[in-house]
Length: 325
Figure 1 (cartoon, rainbow, N blue to C red):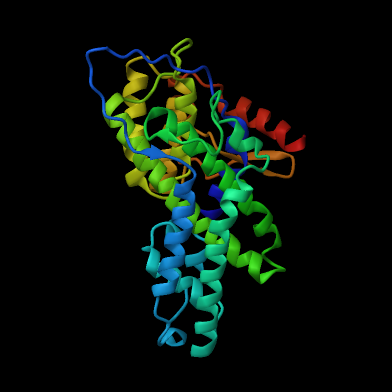
Figure 2: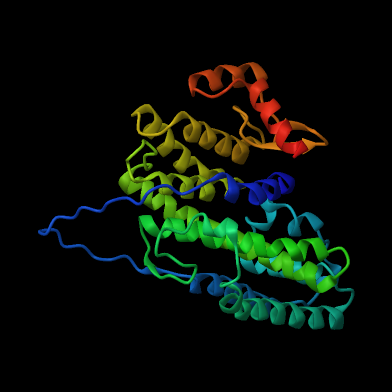
């Protein structure tokens, strides 16, 4: 699961491009209550919440407990564990005795609070993968009512944090601090994308899945929702409602087969760590292959016809050319 998600995070920002803005028509007789604002401070809040969890975690008897390394690299575990449980796993990762664990606990808290402080400084860094989700007039430090348009800002923040963790992961094998920073950023990313998914589910339950029909003005919301969905593919309870809404939009002719099929594979990955249609690919040298694997190649061929997608062989050839470039 870790390999699949890392691959997805790296390529998705470039693959999805926002479309035209949606026109908002409101009745002068309607009284509306604006949702609470969403902004970058929520990223800071996730770092602070993790730091608080580390601070309150007891390390008594820690060195006698078994440690599962998967708790710090398998997203199905990293993202699913309660915050305090995961904070304890983080401390246990590299301490030998009580004094060592106490020292490491203090160090992990400092790192988490330091990363929280860095957010406001680094948020202005150039981040092309994040920029593709920003609407005209929107910046990473914008504050928006937590509704439809905020989904694009949430996706931009998701991509920004994902991109920011990559250099630390590259340095992780040689630098213990970078390794711990990457672990903490991964966990904060989990909490961020979980909240994004809850906001997305709330939106589709009220308004339905947006349309990508030309001139609908909602194409940018579709790409934001697909981005949000694929990054919670470690939890079928979060992908399921989004996939159900996209199925309905496709059946109603409001959503293209491309995005509807993409949502099917995202939900299948969340449930089975596999694909039914074949949207996610990896490279083995100059050859592309579905990653995660397809459940059934014959079913994939039929589904691709139903959704109006190119044949699997043609897609593999196209993806392989990308591997060589």
